[in-house]
Length: 173
Image (cartoon, rainbow, N blue to C red; front, side, top):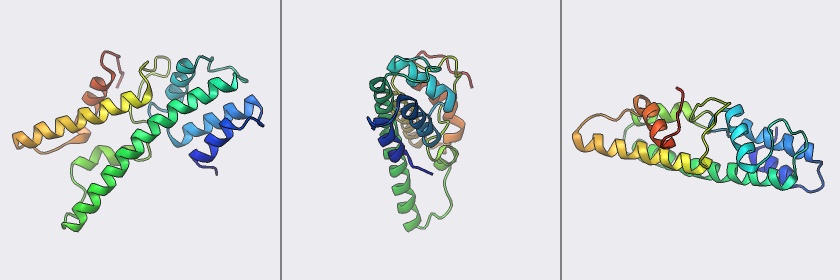
């Protein structure tokens, strides 16, 4: 089974037929699909400018969609790295059980279905920007709660953070 980077190389490979490149992009969504598979696919198609049912889209449009997906994946991998570093520090300090901070993150590890939405109406901002907004929103909420002496609870705040991340986009939960 090929990984995300190998599939991304296939999307960029000029020797491949457009239909094979399209299929490689679809397989990338099996590794990273922040809105869920169908909604992320529709978002990428709309932002790159080809129809989701087009079996042989222009290769440059496929590469544009891949670049947006890679940008969002880089944001998410950086966030996962920060979480992993924090957990290592906590373990060294003797905190062996995951805290409430990790409840939401444990459900989204790997970057699939981070922000569930209607596949027929995916959000319009770039994927990376939506993820940055969501992470900032959740981090800001944690800081407010820490100052007020309340316990952290990412899982309980996930849906409100999703709504704030879209800024005006209606997100069905």
